Amino acid sequence: MTVKRIDGWRFYVRGGQRGCLVDLEAKSCSCGVFNVEKIPCSHAIKAAKSSGWHMFTVVKAYYRKDYVYVSYAANIMPNVEHDPIEPDIRCIPPIPKRKPGRQKKSRWLTWLELSRKKGSKPRKSHKQYACSKCRQPGHTRPHCVAEDGE
Image 1: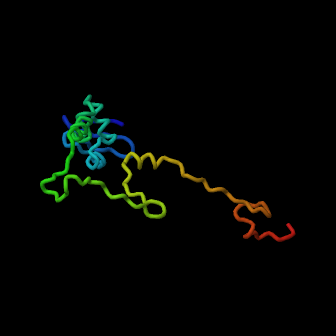
Image 2 (image 1 turned 120 degrees about the horizontal axis):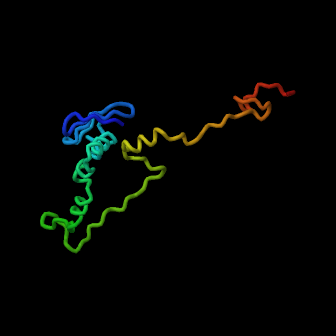
Image 3 (image 1 turned 180 degrees about the vertical axis):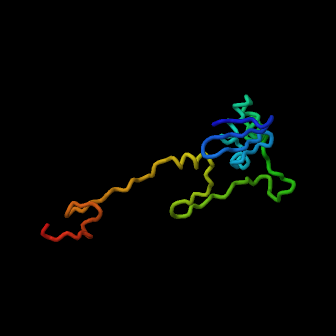
């Protein structure tokens, strides 16, 4: 990837299939990944590294380790004044019942998972079948057109 600096915060990153405009101050990229996920895309990472900035400054604050620690530092208690729950009754979540059959995949793949999936090989390569009667490829025994004498 090649990086051209436009001004202090904006860069034009050329590489891969297209070029993208990266704005590190607004934390956005024209590819759209940085805008949606708030985690730097490959263009934003290249722009930040080429300018010598640490990735800590580019990632959104709520993805940082210290924010996660602060959010779980205190105990989370239900508000008893507004809830009609008696204090001696425990709040237990309901037991989920699984439906029969294969479970539906209900999450969207991230851009990284999609890019890895594009380069992968297919799960199964289809076998070229040959007829067991005449040994010719392209058909099987029930559909064989050869005569019985061959």
